[in-house]
Length: 441
Image (cartoon, rainbow, N blue to C red; front, side, top):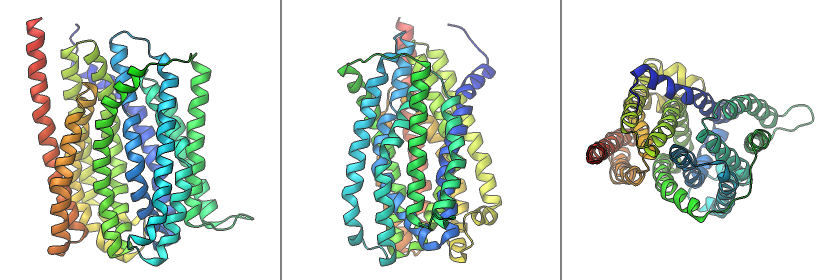
């Protein structure tokens, strides 16, 4: 077991994280392109896609969470010196079943939209956007699955370069389909959904071709693989779902008051998601490296990767928080020219700055938990933090004290602190037990 200095662990994590950061930012910039184009088209378009994506995200996120178990599980297998190419087709089957379930659930929700209480003018565009988005799930899950599979081999450059290229494709399609060009009419909200559908299939099919060109696979069946995927992926999936439902329920609750609040929530969430992609990529790198060290029973490397990853994540989010709190008006101005949105979003930006630091810490800790296959604690911590504290507290502050969206974000800050505290306590116990076990051996 070799000892290395801190620079070694930073370099190892960045080797994986840097391309993932680029790809994750690309993936989010695809969504940012939707937001910017929608905001320039009209506030109603912005509000409609904000509500629609909030609902769809609550459904899709569960499947994405299950798929995210592929790379940490296969990384553990690599650490145990097992061949992992044979899990290519089982991974694909797993993802496509999830895509089908997600598509059907999304379609089931569409007829319910008129009865939720949104403004009448928003109902039809919300339904149209959700319908097209439902049809894009197979492309989206194909891309997510293959990205996770390649990540387990530490192949991260190509899939993330593909994502970055598709940012420009998405912007081009958004402009053409939303505003119209030549013989193509202006499609408004549905144009945004069609653009996303095309881009998702392009990304998924491109990665599929890459895998077939560069690797040889054989069909393989192992029930134990799906069982292990569910053991790791289900808690991750439910944890992410709990968090996403919390964030998106704020847009839905405030959207019933006025569409402009939903638009403001989407705008702020878009900003925090952009910066979140860096610690999220570091978290993915932590999960891969910690997973490999865990499979190889290398406690020293496991601890070093964990510590270095957490520090990198928190420092970045502190810098991001400083930028958001210093330049809130220019940043919000990138997305909208609506004065009402400025009035609602700018006060939230200062609270967002505090939230980000703890958000960077919690996602790094979650990466460690994924690597050591202790994902149940992530689910428990998310549920307690968001649903026992954040949403109830936020609702009281929003409506009893008339703080509206600011109240909900104050609740989110409290939840982030609680979330970090629970995971730190659990990981501290895990490390103590791991060292004791090693000493006995």
